[in-house]
Length: 344
Image: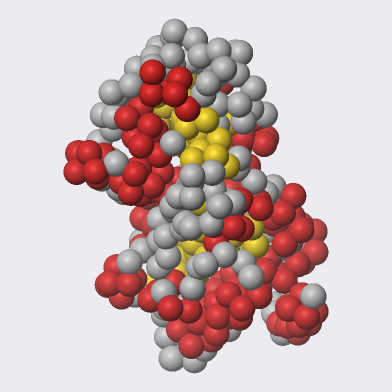
């Protein structure tokens, strides 16, 4: 609550000195956080009159656009490593935590009824397990009527942080996946068909009987999709939820992470969702348009201080207060105008 009161006061103070007709903010990138960014943008415009034009084009596209300085901020679910940040002259900070969720199109299976594991998901995505009634799937699902139909694999076709989280997890679960495919925003898929964005994958899975795909949890909720429970590190079959994402993030030490580079997959904890991840904002350290940068920071300051309820409504996990304070400290020390003056 204290963070919200202080944040609201700082936003009000900042807006007093702002131009009467501040330009809209532009951003591009990850589809993973698009539902909450859209919700925040709508509420922020009603509150301040300033619009946020966010293009949901995938993390790869967001990194390209912010690198080319064609937008005010980029968004990626694949954090850049500290050396990559240094080379590009950028900083990154997390905004919310969510999770990749395996979704299926099986008529007789209810949401949460199907149980899967990381090694099993790797075998499916390697194209080695091709039938839903395969003994390895049946062994995890006693009493479930698994059909003898083909498994139709759906993956992302675009450069995607959602894919980075997914393939990072599969690399931890399967030595064969790690050596043959690896992790990244884009990989050479051994099997399946590609859909563009979380929206494209969700659409394919809804249309193709027997399919399996992976999407951010907000898309599961919005499209009423059939999700699978996944076996976590402690052996629990966990359903995706804000509580499970929070459990995955419980041990995260952002202060110790150089450049705020932190991966949350396969986190410990009996209630932890195993395919969780944060989503990140990228900005250049030297801001050639400092007023635009200030408007971006005011927007995310507002989101951190007044947007938690909206995030929770979509089952994203807001960043804890200490992490928000760390982010704001980084803004003050790292973001400068061309003369070296702090932007925030």
